[in-house]
Amino acid sequence: MTPTVEYTEMKAFLRFFSERFLDQRVAAAQDRPLAMLEQQERESPGRAASGLRMAVNNCMEISSSWPLSQIVALDAEMHAKGLLSLSCVRSRVWGRYAAMMKRGHVRTGDEFAVAQAVLADPSLKQSLPESQRQSLQAMVTAYGPAGRPARAAHIKP
Image 1 (spheres, rainbow, N blue to C red):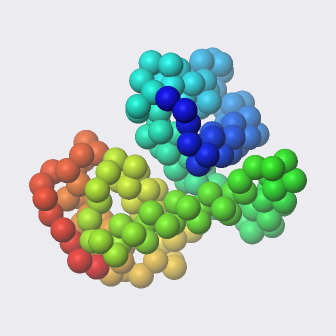
Image 2 (image 1 turned 60 degrees about the vertical axis):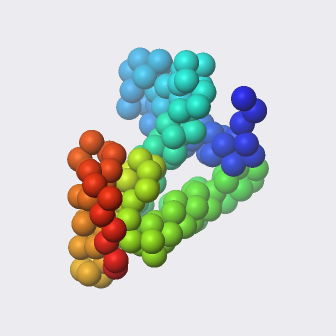
Image 3 (image 1 turned 180 degrees about the horizontal axis):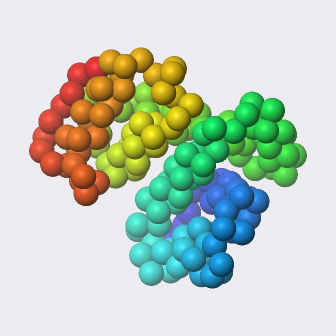
């Protein structure tokens, strides 16, 4: 299986982000995000894309409270290295969020992870309208606690 351009770009983003901000938190090398992704690529290539998206969503959650000055500096550094910037990756994730809100339901585990990250993001508590937060919470609840559809519920925002 040949990885897509998007997969390759997102994996490069994860490599940079995890080496810079996550690897020091994990003692065992095999438990680091990129090592776990590469193991998944070997053992279950079809599921690796989902694992990558979940890891990237975790990066978005970790960086959600960072000040703009830190994001701008990191974006410039990543751009200079030929990588997708944090802001670019955020916009891709937010694109999935916008599509989910327009559709009125969560379709996949990846969207479920995005929705949970949005609900958990402390920086959005003030800026996300309560009605949108409630709609999103209803979509997450309808999708199910185990990350799969509980029933075919559609919630209109």
